Amino acid sequence: MRSLLAEAPCERLDLDAYLEDFDRHFWNSGATGFWKLERRQTFREAGVDSWEAFQRGEWQEALSLIADQESHFERYFERITQSGFALHRVRVIEEPLTPYLQWELHLLRLKEKHGERTRVLPKENLQGGEDEGLLPEVVVLGKLVMYEVIYDDDGNLSGGIKFTDANVISKCREFIQGLHVAGEQLRSFFGRRVAPLPPPAVNSAG
Figure 1: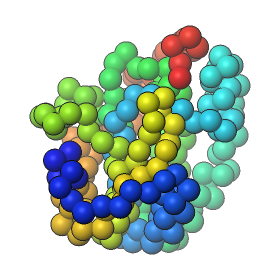
Figure 2: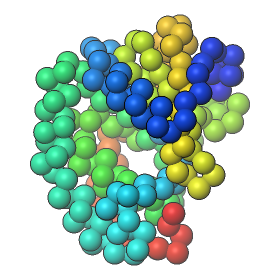
Figure 3: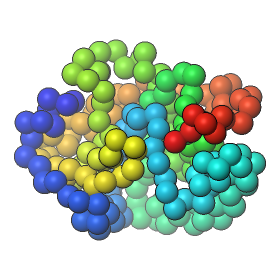
Figure 4: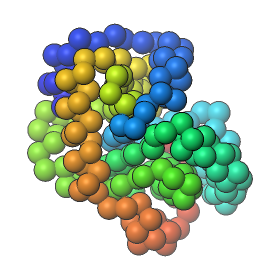
């Protein structure tokens, strides 16, 4: 995938431009849907109350704040359904889980409950997909636009690279769809590998 993106025409967007462009296209994803590949094991979510609590070592507070988003996600996914598309996510995981990933999987489990179609894929099952290096963070919105999401070294969102070539978008979407089929439903993975875990160690979070 990396070589495909490296050779494709694209537009680099700073953070504000990326967020504005993404929001403009998101609700028009259409029947083809939203497909996201998430590869990094650690991000920073500054400003997200639950993540901030997790960072402070307040694990139960972090989980409580996730639970408080129930009604928000119920309305959000109802609107997505009414808009005629669905959200699909492939979450690549490495074990032992990073503290961030342990936190994120609780959030993704709530999203799954309300309609996001999330599959978990161990990095060992990528089957040569990383011969060119770690897979990028990619979001495909329908047939018309795709982004490589860019983060700084600390895992803060810093912008995106926009692609509009239909052939490139199709190939990347098909690649993500293949990983999705190969993955395990988050529900079953969560019950087996996440739910039994003790609270994550704050000193390794970030």
